[in-house]
Length: 88
Length: 416
Image (cartoon, rainbow over all chains, first blue to last red; front, side, top):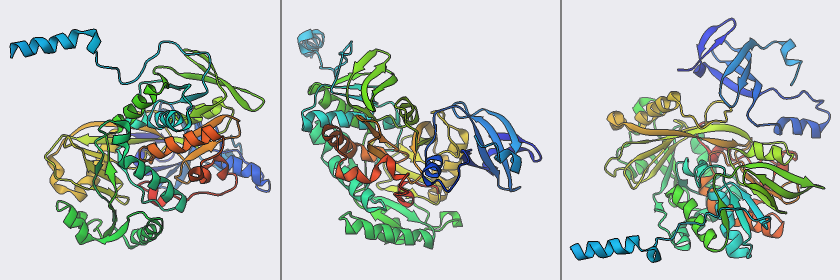
């Protein structure tokens, strides 16, 4: 079975997580066209991406660096207010 | 007896009586084609067939990076149905089912089209409510679809455990009499043969490496066999759509997520119908060979790979045994994965794009095989007239910018 080695919670089975997708650029929501573009369109080709992952039992959010071609996870960090500010 | 064998051998070896190839395999590309279709799966080949058969456009090249029908066409669980939720979806898939019903005759090939009836099980009151809604929409548009009781499910499929091991008792089902299955690879081969007979050229093992655009219009396609001048390109590459969109300079509303399936060892025919459970994340039918074909929800995260996983097959087996405990001793003999084009609203992305002459047949998520014939028909019309066919008007890529979503999630897939 697949596991992830995380800070704080240690090694946990993949089934305990929900992937909430890649980080998207932060845009001014007053600019509706830009907001819609950022929400629904992007580069969806295979590459290393920064993604939000939620750990259900601990209710912690993590940021993964994951290669979407190979499924290899390069790094996992706890998502904090600071890490959300750097967008993509 | 001996004389007959010798005669047979004579015919077999005589080049005059050679069995014709299923489709042409020209060595070299021409300099230009009227239309280049990228993707030699069911959708691309059906589009080529309809372009030649109905619109007289025969200078068409289909390029396929692997082998014909080797992508998602050969990886799905072959279910054909039209009991969708949105009016646009129902009308679109209704036309597809109609085309499928006579497709063996049209293609002069036995597609093993088999009308089975299709039960979508309800394990909760909430699911029953959505099913009533679906049945109403379906009936309004002339699709045979009705809510039935748990007893009706049991009558059609006596082997089912209506209690599901006590975990998720079955309360009723949405029954869709036209639900069917067919041999998926035969569909691709049948379209390829007919298209080929009319002059369409098919190039396997030919990768698209770039799309040339001048003043907002397609002018050429670059491939591993050389450059092709063309004013019209159809992208029918579910699983690789983001890559093709990037070549055309467009951002993608599609994400790639694996969808896995498996088959059991063959057994005597016992399952006549198609059984689907959104709650248990399974769908199952039995092929003419006796294998159970089983599928589940998409994988939990984006991945551009056709690998299959132990997690998939163990969780699917777990849910299957809730429905059919007697299968405990049955073996899984094959499992595989495909790369699905997932869209935010579980509807396809089709038709014209911002780039002139670049047409999209994408966003086929977990619902593409059943749409093969209608995609061929509507995409060919769209390409020939440079106007979206009325059945696909609602599926344009710009709908996300207008927030005009289709809301097909409740009827397009399991596991949500």
